[in-house]
Length: 462
Image (cartoon, rainbow, N blue to C red; front, side, top):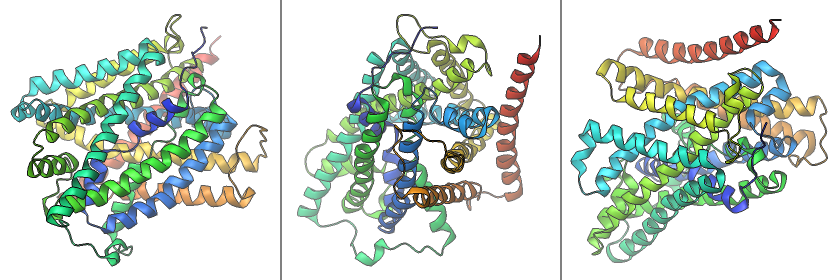
């Protein structure tokens, strides 16, 4: 078998995390909730992001192999749980990120100065599929090329946030702050169910540090560069969320902030007020670039799960092939593209199918966080088994530090899963909703289990 090529350095990993983790939509959602979201960002940072970072640093330096969380769970709990963890991680991204490309398609219509195209089904289908395949083909050709998709996409996050901060500061200087700030507002009402549910949403916005280590054998010196990238990008991601949320609230009245396009909306309105009418279109173009980078990062990264499962013979052997020239798991990446295309087309289908697709999107948060439960539990499993590694960077505090990190992270993740199953006020038939979401999650898990059992039965045949 041809070997994977190590091409990702520290800078690539930092920019990879910047494009994969923070999203402008999370800033808009947080700002629409008011200044109390700043306090919730801090809680999400302390109770989820920090434990996540410590967990990924220890596990990735213990086993810096291709497959990341798939390998960590397998070594901690065995083949079945490793496959199930990888299956949940791969399948939820297969559904979730094509849906985000549809949002990028709408933003492209804004950038072109033709917002009516957002309602043109043919344009939206062709655009989203084109972005998907550009990102995946560049990743399939090789990470020497594909990494630049993520690197350039990261500026689709940096530049809009920088513009927002600058324009908000100028707007405050000339016109005053759009929302009056009181330090007491930062403290959230933790006793309310809606506050707890919102906390879980912000945890989801902080998720993603485990993605880059999935490509462990395509990273230069992973034991050194992954931890450094997590620390640097972790600081930057947190600043993006905190400063971006405050700047948006300083620029626009809370009641006017769109939870979908809030950042672009603020930059466009404030820019036009200050005589820079072009800023809205510029940011829309940058958001499209960030979508291209995110698609390459998530869908290209999770394709490595298919590759490793192919190596373990849980999935067809061709998925384990590495291109002799490009040094990438090209077949796994191409299959990812085919399946993602199917989900994109499905999302534009008739209303009954589209309703089912939206239920599917509600399920992906639950499915996404199941591997996190496995990863936090793996920390304790390795400590309990006293698995030693001279090159591993262990969580500070010895056994107590590992237990604290694991329990806090596991608890925050479990809370996010529970809150993801709580229906909103817009849901009329709660029991039907719960049956669809919980039943769908069970179907995902059962499908993964059946695939594993079928592969094991094939391997046992003489």
